[in-house]
Length: 452
Image (spheres, helix red, strand yellow):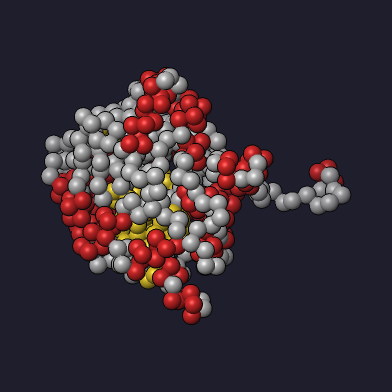
């Protein structure tokens, strides 16, 4: 690293307790349905992760990695629920490490918040048996045995990640997934030792942290993604608001005591949420892609018909109205700053970053120690290198249109904002580039398959 790089806060190394990252830019948890139905991985996912490492980010947080098959959000996401998957994740880590980039696996469980359930089970597991409000996914209320099994599944996932040679793990405790369903006062309606008071609602995740420390060791990096504020009534005003910033700060204090090495601050107790990812819903795309979910939940058929009617435009307006500014850079920075002031470990902030100037302000003000980025890196995989070359933004920045999000259930994940490309053909070529190289040796010129 040059002296000039060291003077730029973006490119200063970040030291955690057990690992160092070369700069302050993390690729946030995002991926498409790139893997096999049974949870085994594919070369396509390796290609996906590698292009961000090649683009210069300091670390990659994997997409949602289910610790059980019942905990996935959709089929065709690679899981970590079996030892047989360790070699695949080792291959992912090795590919990313070639570019001096760290790789943190996000250990996840969907709970009641799913998109497409798969054939293995009808219902997810949750702290509650109330349906998820937007799509109406119906869960089974977890028994104590379910809780114990799930805690063990997280611990085993961390152990497998370590055996795969990865650099650490992140607990997905944000955005409405299972850990949020226990933490959030707007979701958790239990009356046992896992419900009611904040201390009881935090019991589940604290047990997970302690189990991971016992299984994977104290010297393995462990961070937690948390929604600092739930905003549970952002879409439906009659829903409970959920956790406050003050409650989340107390949870972070408890988790630091239990052994968490860093916090990744997000927002919203569901996904998608008007504030995450901010920018609105492209209803013209939703009308074409939501059909993949139409038979999944109690409300999905209703939503499918609503989105295709004139009322869909009104729903899109309501979503944007509750989603914050059109330019969401630093949308969660104030929350991250409050968390950072309360803990002694590093804090990562997500929230639409793509301007070097905005990131430098966030770092220089010590509101956070690093930023995580998803959509802006999907639009420009080499965003970090643009910053290194002195640009504040790349020539064709992310528009926050969220077409990548709503295409993800049916189509390969990528940037679908045609205005960012010279032609539709160029856009499709970029989207499909993740499928190359394949896992098969390339054919040699002049040799047909029968002669190979």
